[in-house]
Every structure is written in C-alpha cells, then in structure tokens.
Length: 279
Image (tube, rainbow, N blue to C red; front, side, top):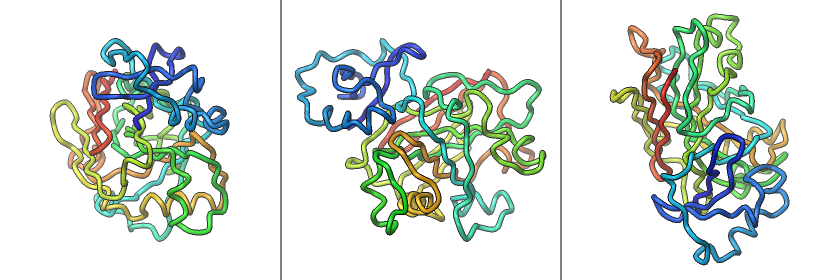
C-alpha cells in the first residue's frame, strides 16, 4: 500500500495511492497519518476497507504533502554509507552516529527548499527514510525490528555545512532550518518493500550528483531501529533518515553547493521521486 496526504499546506487529507495517477481519500477511516491515529488502529481500518468502492481523484489536481503529519521525532543516522564516509575523510563509525532534526523541518516532497540568508554552503543529501508503525523500546534483536516499521519514503536531508561543520561540529545546527526535510512523495508500507538493496539518486539541475545503492549501508535499517530502541522510545510516525551515499556537494573539489533556482530531484527505487526548487 502507498499512503499519502493531499491538499493545501495545513489542510492535507489522508489518502491511499491506487495507481501512478490516482488516489482515494480515507479521512473517514483515519483523520490523518500521525502518531495518535496510527496508535488507535487507523492503518488497520484502512487496510480492512474496500478501497475499490471509493471514487478516485487525480493526483495532478492536488498538492502532495509530507506522507506523515507532525512526527514526534526526526532521527538521523550520519555517515551510514561506506563510500560517503570515505569522501568526507571520516573513519567509518563503529556504532551509528545519531543526530536530530526539528520535526517542523518536514515538508512535502514537491515544496520549495529555502536557502538560509547569506548561506553559501547549503547541501543536498538523498536518503531512505523509515517511518515507525508501532511503539518500540528495548527491542531484543535487529531481526525483531522489521515488525515495528510502518514503511519507507524518500527524504532530502538538506544541510547547511557552515553551521554543521565549521561552527563547533554540532550537526543539528546545520540541519534544522525551515524546509530542510522534504519527504515523499508517499510512503510504501513495509510489506511491499525490502530496504537493503535499493538504488537511490539525487540530480541537481540535470546533473547526476548521487547514484548508489542502500547495499552500501554500514548499518542496515533493522540494526538502526534496534540500536535506537536501546536508548529512546520510538513512536508511530517517528521518522528515521538512514544516511546519504557519496556525491554530496561538500565532497566535490571544488564543492558544488546549492544556489537559488536549482531543481533537486531525489529518487529511490520502488518508492518514487521528489522534486524541489531552491529559493
């Protein structure tokens, strides 16, 4: 199943994608794709309904918002691709590197990315994003983690390198600007996608910058969820950005940072493509 939220900003309605051009609204079954409604069995009500009886709408008639509304947390895994660690000059970590983004950085996958005032080092990072489906804490093993996954979507983990790297190296400072986490275009539920060998890419204004596979993960998805659950409680709707592959702007010589008016396209095999314009 592919789930989405369609409509104007702050007025999105939950929907299920039925093909590449159409969706059906399900707001009579679940008020929104968020923590409270997922905890109260909203997904099961949708799965158990006859969606074929509903009148489809055209996706082209609607703005596609973030597939998750108001996540409690946006957790990020840093340096989680072997080749990306090499391009940054870092030693591949022995344990996952963890940082957070502010939940209100999350926007729709086709919304604009706003470059901060005077920034000359705003960077792109395509990432596979995992959304939690039920509460997880102190999981017994990585193998048990899969049953806690709602699904997968495409994230663009936009980063301001001056604040992330040069200003004391506290990563969250470069990650929490408004619009810095486009997400979408929809979420593919966990029963329909295997995450650990998917092609992902980022194209900036027609130039392929990132082109890799999730098989380059240092820490696979299940391990990351298990690891996080050892020291924080994960809730339905929580977002985990699982890291970016090589090819970020910072890794080029000279660097290729984002400028105003560029088109950033992020694609993951089996999920789809999001596309933002910088301004």
